[in-house]
Length: 238
Image 1 (cartoon, rainbow, N blue to C red):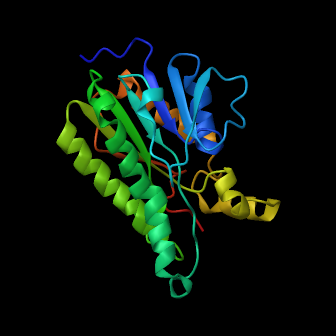
Image 2 (tube, rainbow, N blue to C red):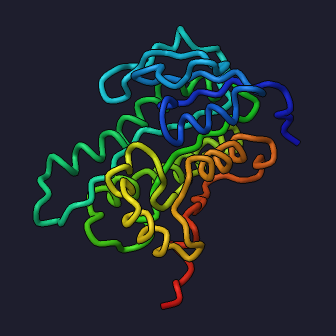
């Protein structure tokens, strides 16, 4: 049995807003939490260590991290919902970079710290759109599909030393999704599209991330966890 009872070192890439901030709030009382993000805004009052870091342009300074990292959560992402005929190749490249390539760079950078743990856990984020065929999602679905494929292959390669899992949400109320939920009509329509009749909250995803980082998930790896209000598997009654 893997012993993960002690306080662990958890690194969040992006933790000042939305889901990342909700995860930081869930973890900060029981673990050593390091938040690597562009800004420390909203982190005041939390027991976390902030590391200035832009995943899109910086190389993470490992000297600011402990020698052992027990958990990594990569939060940066994008939502580009536009008709395929209007998308340029640069949009696909940009979405692939922030969702996938920048994440790969982070994982490679801290791999020695992850393998130094008795059993570390990586949590990545996909989207319900990687599973369902949804109009106007070609770019983000492609990028998130890459995340899911990578996670399963990495989980196989590093088992049992590193567990790797993915959370695939549906639309969640974060700053990134503000333009889709910025008035009551949009909120009502979004809620109605989900079998559970509401859109996601950051805490819904944070609680799953905390579970996947914990000893309670020590026999779970290579999985895509759909936290999506039933969107990917249930039909809504018309």
